[in-house]
Image (cartoon, rainbow, N blue to C red; front, side, top):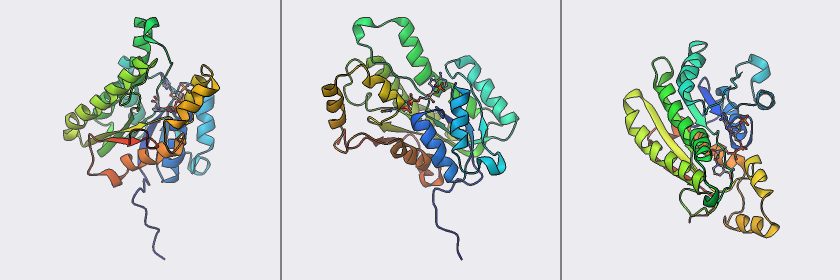
Length: 258
Ligand SMILES: NC(=O)c1ccc[n+]([C@@H]2O[C@H](COP(=O)([O-])OP(=O)(O)OC[C@H]3O[C@@H](n4cnc5c(N)ncnc54)[C@H](OP(=O)(O)O)[C@@H]3O)[C@@H](O)[C@H]2O)c1
């Protein structure tokens, strides 16, 4: 019998998944493990990371997945942390960077502290991880990074402009990093989701009326997204299916920007 055809096979690949303790990152970890990848799961909440690990294919049999709690907002420490992950095991074949924060906040209450918090967590972390991955011994001969932007960056998102700016930065970073990291054999692409039902949205919902929430739902002709809708695209961007893509900005938004 021939093996089933699977162009997204990730058997033997070692991939760091950030934001793996919740939402899109957790769904991405589940999908990547099903495709055969060996994962390093990052977030800050160790208990919730262990909860993700328990859901992964292959976790109990070979203990192949690892948990690495770490605050990615500590930008200066990120490259050394990545170095340590690789020194302890093997170089990474990819990073699915799903960690991020969002707090709705109108510009009338803008503050430098809020700006720093959001920019560090969403944009600074991506840049620091890129620096970490390109270090000697930290990436396989051919590796890939999948970043997450947002339609908040490509369609007006009032009351949310600091987040939107951080996600616009992800688009700019994807393009620049893609070219800068060509010689390191690292491809860099990003996904642009519209609203996906995760804890991040659940928290925002508490500030909205039922009418406002319904309005958000109808922004996507196909309704709210499911975390797997983004996880599948991230898997595509880390697997050989996307070997001819770098610097691409891939919209997965339920038709929001159609
Ligand atoms: N949901 C949506 O509608 C939507 C739409 C467009 C884009 N996105 C983007 O997609 C990504 C995932 O969103 P989500 O909805 O899955 O969010 P979520 O459910 O709130 O999960 C966020 C994840 O990020 C981790 N995280 C946050 N700050 C961190 C830090 N400083 N260091 C390490 N980990 C950190 C959290 O882990 P701990 O709590 O354990 O630290 C958690 O695992 C984010 O970048 C978000 O901006 C989401």
